[in-house]
Image: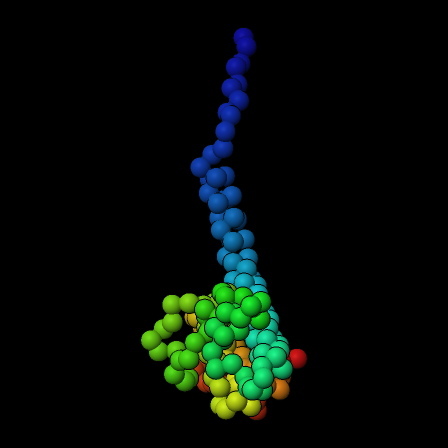
Amino acid sequence: MELFIGKNKGFTLIEIMIVVGIIALLAAIAMPQMLRSRMNANEMVAVGGLRTISSACQAYYNDSSSRSYPALLSSLSGATPPYIPATLSDAAATYADPLPSPEPTQYYHGYYFQHSLSNSESFSTVAWPKTYNRTGARNFFVDETGAITYTTTKGTAPDRTSSPLQ
């Protein structure tokens, strides 16, 4: 008498549910870190954009016969050759403090830029995150000195007395 024991090929529902649960747990652990990494990358691109704007404004000042800073960043991107890329100047405009209102349609890697000219000898540019705690958690500021400062309070405009960027 021969006993025939068949081998089941495949997985049981319980085994599949355990694997799905483990994958969901790992995803729940990894997702906040990925989002934070993206936010840090956006902030560093914003800082890089401010450094580019600051250097371009200084070059524009040195190249201009009137020794003045540009009133609009489109003057920097429209020059031949351009001082800054058009995508950066498109994200910058004159908006009301402390936050852009109405919300601008152009942004640069999750940040809006606000450029203002106090007089021909002084300018300031502020970078605001498009969505706080999603595209960025800090507001950045640069002026003719080239020093970049920041604040972490939503709706608070940074200035030269804010925390310096390390």
